[in-house]
Amino acid sequence: MQYANAFFMEPHMLKMVGTSGQVSLGKQYVGRYFEMQIQADGGILLKPVRVIPEADAWLYTPEMRERLAQAAAWMAEHPPRETDLEQLAARVEGGE
Image (cartoon, rainbow, N blue to C red; front, side, top):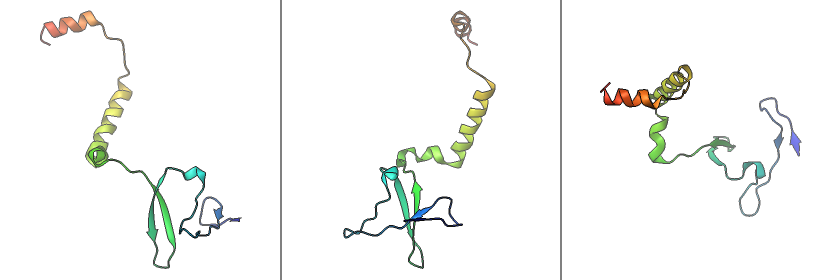
C-alpha cells in the first residue's frame, strides 16, 4: 500500500514487522547503512549514512576540507600541460 504525504518527497509504504523482528526496505537499499533514531512518540526514523574508517576521518575535518577546496580551485586555474623534460632537467641541474 502506498500513500502520499505532504511532508515527504516520495510516496510512503506501509510495512509490517515480521516474526523475526525485521522490516524489509526493498532491494534499492541493499548494502546501505542507516542510523536509527527512536522518537519520543515511539516512531522510528532511519537516516542514510556513510561509514568511513577512523584512519580516514582526518580527511573530513573542516581544515582539510578547506585545503582540498583550495587545491581544487588551484587545479581549475592551472590545467595540466605537457612538460618539457629538457627544460625541467636544466632547471633541476641549475638548482632552481
